[in-house]
Amino acid sequence: MNSDGLPILLVDDEEEILLNYSLFLRYAGIAPVLTLEDSRKVLQLLSEKNVAVIVLDLVMPYMSGNELLSKIRREFPQIPVIVMTAVNELKTAVECMKEGAFDYLVKPVDKNRFITSVTMALEFRDLHNEVSYLKHHLLADGIECEDAFSSIITNSLKMLSIFRYVEAIAKTQRPVCIFGETGVGKELLAKAIYVLSGLKGKFVPVNVAGLDDAIFSDTLFGHKKGAFTGAEQEREGLIVQASGGILLLDEIGDLNEISQVKLLRLLEEQKYYPIGADVPRKSDARIVASTNKDLEKAIADGTFRRDLYYRLCGHSVHIPPLRERSEDIPLLFDYFLEQALKSLSKGKPVYSHKIVTLLSNYNFPGNVRELQTMVYDIVAQYKSGSLSVDSFKHYLIQKGAYGKELLSEPLKESIVWPQIQGRFPTLNEIEDFAIAEAMNRAKGKQGIAASFLGITRQALNRRLLRKSRSS
Image 1 (tube, rainbow, N blue to C red):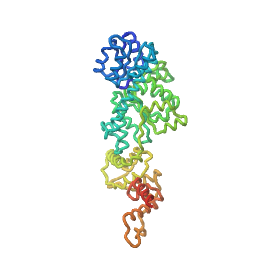
Image 2: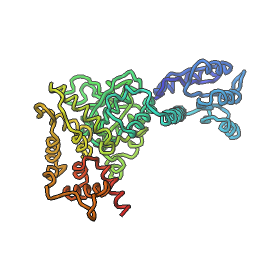
Image 3: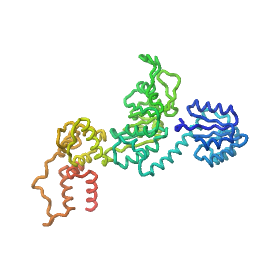
Image 4: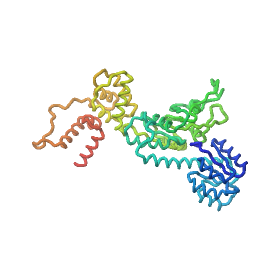
């Protein structure tokens, strides 16, 4: 629960109170805990050691809590301070809050109220640190740990901004939800978060799509011996394997309602029940989820819990589809081509830039994964010499991306460049004619017309817009 492992400091001159409330924190999984009976030693300790939260009594000998609170807020403003005292006076409480206290608790404090206050102080501190870290990273020109993203081939400014954001959130303990269409690389980004997090435990991925509650519970939480027929021995779930690391729940949007409730308990309390167990177990695994579904629409449809959505989205990342970062297609094509040639033990072929232009005009509903499959498939069929543009065209036609007009014959001899009032046409006039002819032959489909012209769909679209504005 304490994401960076810094201790909670309890300051009180009564030894029994220090002992009791230390036990409350440790029982709740909030550790480590430091205690001090002498208020004079607090500032010296803070100058030597970082702490996450301070719980401070007001009425103490030597140095009062009011005086100490003022000095802590002046010298260590980043540390939330909770005042816990027997002084039940509104004026005193108001003065403490004005001085910067995070919360004011009146003794004797209920255990749950105490734990809630400390937990909220920890979350506040984490959020404050994250905001500072985000400001630093998002205003930076580049990324600090390029190696963590080495498996993601990109030259996109959109992806670079995502990398900077991921660097900023990676070391927190809050859950992350990664959104994106199938094949955009959600698991690769989850692995980058794991590398950047510095966690010592394992990265454990599991696809939860289509799992009924019994299989989901057994897979994640395990079971006790004799919990059901065939359970001849106790088995630990993946949540144990991910201890101290990251558990990736892929396709979280397909999780059934009963399992959603169990996952919510895990996120809220860091507790879970193995099948057949009466006593909950604690987990320190960080949860990362991914989905290609629109979870807000699923909430509106009643198939996904709103409270679970907000718990999962402690941080959220949206990976753009390949069609929105077509500048990556040349890089990815070269990378997958090299990988395919190596795995199939084939020599490097010659290929035309028209292949990349053709691919840049395709929507790629399967995103990066589809491009990889396409390249491997075509390279497997290629013998020697050069890669044919037509082989890629045939692939796209087979996928239903285009009709056979993509393989149309070259321009007929009877079609010639126009003469304008007996003079030679200008470059602009030739461009207008070529665009009009390409659009006609492509039956109005910009992707095919752009392929005929040897430009990208975006470049063609810009020219059509410019032409419509000038006409």
